[in-house]
Length: 315
Ligand code: UDP
Ligand code: MG
Image (cartoon, rainbow, N blue to C red; front, side):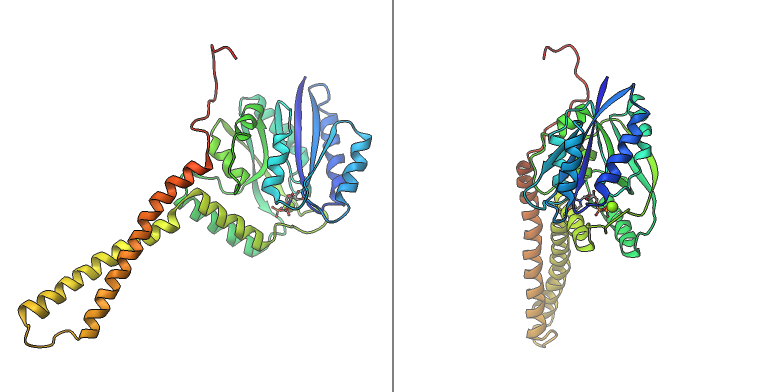
């Protein structure tokens, strides 16, 4: 029988722990003859009674496992910690607030059986989602897909099933600043999708506050592309060329064609010279971006390649 690991990050979800646990048990009751499962709760430094709630369940059910982080590290890290400790043939990451409907787990498993290595939950619509979040996510995906090296699917969530071999590769990532979704997308493999409508969260409020989301978005921009730095370079090059031409024009007119009269004031000449030099500085920034890019890539220390399959080799 195959083992399915469920990874559930918990941050101040005291009222949801029991609910999500019950919902998952319910789902697996119908899958009993096909799958075994383990549930890994990761307490991401909750300040409420969440860890107490998890321990209660853990004591009654040997299938439940519990990781507690020493403080709040954020969902991305909590998920990573959970993934590191999974043993299943497949792993399902699911939010604790019941916004990711557990009823869809059989559908994820089906798609996995049909050959997908990664099954991604795509959110159709978010009930009770504020307009700031809507606009924010719209622009986030627009910008990301413009500047990023690899495309990310809009509305793709962390509600995902990963085959064991994907998890094995995921564990090799060493970068600190991370967005779990983005890393998984980077890995490649065969993907399939499950569509769902996100419910309103059951209890508590979303801890992924707006500032936290902005921080996540910014760090995705920075870790996925050097576009902001390169932009300075492009701007610099543009300024150098235009002010250079203007300067040339001034030199020709002022000092060659009519040296006797004052066509351009000294202030104007100085201003053009100044702008030219600013352009030089900016384009040097762009140049630095190229070096930083190299360093960044080395530091991230990503695997050089990911094997999808391997045949005929001894282990
Ligand atoms: N979460 C976490 N650490 C955090 C923030 C959130 O582990 O610092 C967990 C949270 O308990 C939940 C999931 O991540 O299980 C999604 O969080 P939330 O509902 O706040 O985010 P949203 O639904 O807005 O994406
Ligand atoms: Mg939520």
